[in-house]
Length: 108
Image (cartoon, rainbow, N blue to C red):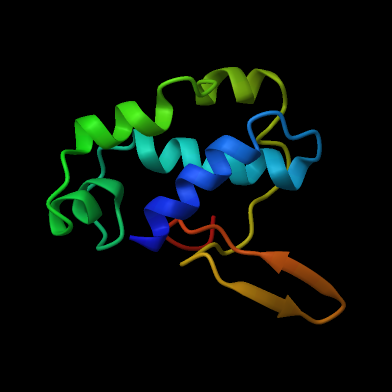
């Protein structure tokens, strides 16, 4: 459930992000919610099924007024290489603080 809450928060708060990090997190959230992938346990569809939620209703609620991922790409939101992203934990990397996204399957 916390992954869905994090997605909702990222889609709402980072919609107009100016920094690449915020844009990437928004893009990750949007792509995760829009995905139809069922190949990993924390996919959007698998979480909705586990929580007995209608994926269509949740998706409509989360993406109702969101900017499409393709529009974000045209604005340059996906610039740079994404780091290994999992489970939405805050982590410390030597010399750098980073927030991992809750939506991606692993390293890209």
